[in-house]
Image 1 (tube, rainbow, N blue to C red):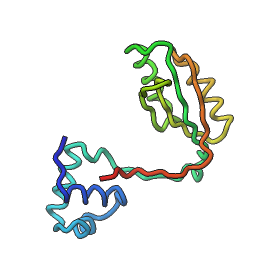
Image 2: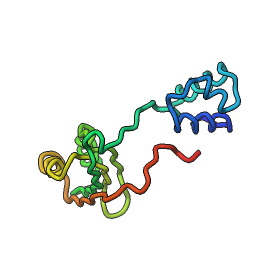
Image 3: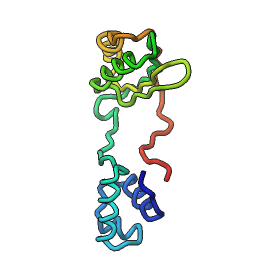
Image 4: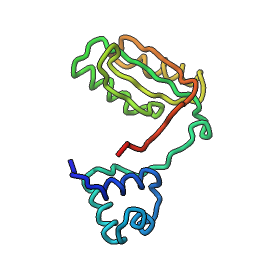
Length: 153
């Protein structure tokens, strides 16, 4: 784990707001000259603090307006069953996020689809066919109240 100082945190905050910001503009925003700023960004990348850069798309504009939160319970929570489920989920592009959970369900998934028929197909052709799945509970998001990709630094 890298020890982040105040300037590193300002750099990260700026990059989370706009990953396409030029190094010159970033340096000015955080109070550095361009060369030291670039060295810090490269060090943050090398340390794994910055994993990657990405474009954030509007789901409805690309034909994926439906978000479904899916709770999955396995028959047995043993290493082999967990690995089987996680491997199967890795290959599904509809699954945007997957978390191993405490509580009633073993996993919580966020799935995006074009419509209810697409979700039914995902459920019947993929999720229910994963070995070891005991139960699936789906909740459909009606409205996205808040969505952020920026961590609170």
